[in-house]
Image 1 (spheres, rainbow, N blue to C red):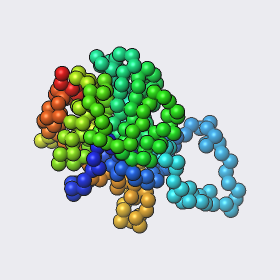
Image 2 (cartoon, rainbow, N blue to C red; image 1 turned 180 degrees about the horizontal axis):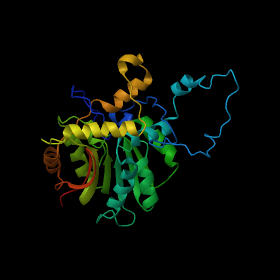
Image 3 (tube, helix red, strand yellow; image 1 turned 120 degrees about the vertical axis):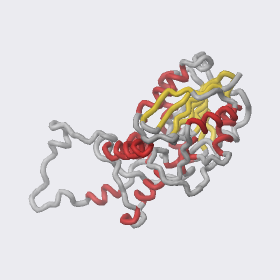
Image 4 (cartoon, rainbow, N blue to C red; image 1 turned 90 degrees about the vertical axis):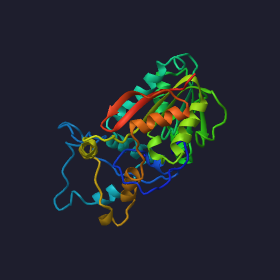
Length: 306
């Protein structure tokens, strides 16, 4: 749990147990994700009258756990595993796409029928699905550098002449002042602050019409806050309570599951609000307006200067 900008550079920064899609952190990487308990993340209680609870007991002499290890090792379909694991990593993730589209739909430019909206780093298509649901009149562009993610999103949304698909980066997308609004969810955090973040934001500002708005959601770095460690611990506690298993890579023998967890939690580059404010100003946006926060995952509305 593809990113719409340059591939993240590994700089040796400390690992953050945060939520970013595998393909957003490692473009083109499609590792199998672990099957979580229950119907979905955090949905681990089974009602007494469910078919699972009323299943017949195995015959005497038959091990009820026989084959369980094989079942756990069997990878899920990519769509199901992706959608099951992200809500376990990000508090409030299930509401992010709905909130983001609703905010953008109320903006001065994107509120107009037939508005052009960009989803940068579209991943598996979650924001695109929500946009089509709330605003079927929008003309959408799904952008991602990873062919596997674009293929996955296209399968989820099916044929739709109102959606344009583009494999590549924000910086490589041609034109200027093309879009009335844009969304970039869990993308900036995967880029190093070595010019890559600024290039990504500058590309978005170039593509937006003057006055166009961008919804930006990312893991943030608390600045000189005594609660910083508590927020990290709370996020990890949330992940455990949601059913996300913990894996010790030293004991896993380099399994696919261990590789996946490492890919989801290492190599991110969160920044603080003051640094974000400086970057968006340099890119051509007004100061970020906070619209969402769940522990240290925060969302902002940015408006391109007129």
